[in-house]
Amino acid sequence: MDLTPRLAAIGESIDECDVVADIGSDHAYLPIYLINNNKAKKAIATDINKGPAEISMKRVKKYGMEQYIEIRTGDGLSALKDKEADIIVIAGMGGILIQNILSEGIDIARSAAELILQPMRDSRLLIKWLIQNSFEIFDGEIVKENDKFYEIIWTRYKQNCYDEKSIDMINEIFYYKNSPAVLEYIDKKISEYSGIIKHLENYTPKNKERIGECNKELMHYKEAKTWLSLNVEQ
Image (cartoon, rainbow, N blue to C red):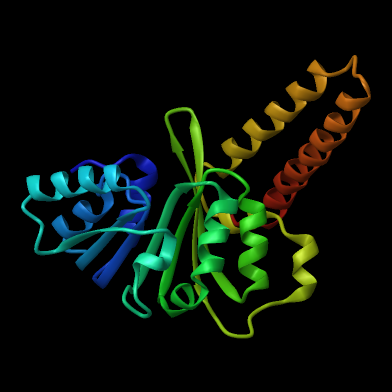
């Protein structure tokens, strides 16, 4: 089974785990890939709604993998038992939603050897929450898929690793510094925010606030680009 670039990056990073749980599984594509490529002995694919879970079950049966992939209906990590999964994947959701899922199932999240998270937005807020809750971020990647960029975070719970001083200096680009697509991603962000600011030049008071927000983001990515040029080994 061929995966999209973002799911392929997640799948390729997993190697010989016992149980992987894919929360909000997209029709069980990733679990099927992992079992088919001997990267996991067992997989659990969950969805909050019955309809998508039934579609996942049909796909699992199509590939004859009922013995290795279990489909469950449940909200977030509540579908899992404590210490049941070595690796937990939560991909294709907003960063705030991922944060809420982890917060509501914090004991299960802490019990996993590894969490692989792929937020569609608000990655900075998610990273801040992870750091505040003693989750060590040990890898990150920017993946380009067609004309879109996706952020992937590899993390795990590590007791007492929280550094309060680092919270106000979070720049998510630090975690993606080794990604081949990171400079292209930053340039796109700079272009996007510069375009918005130019479009709102004749602003009303409401637009003035939005311009201030965009200028802040523009500076964030310009600083990240400067930092990369000074600190990343060529």
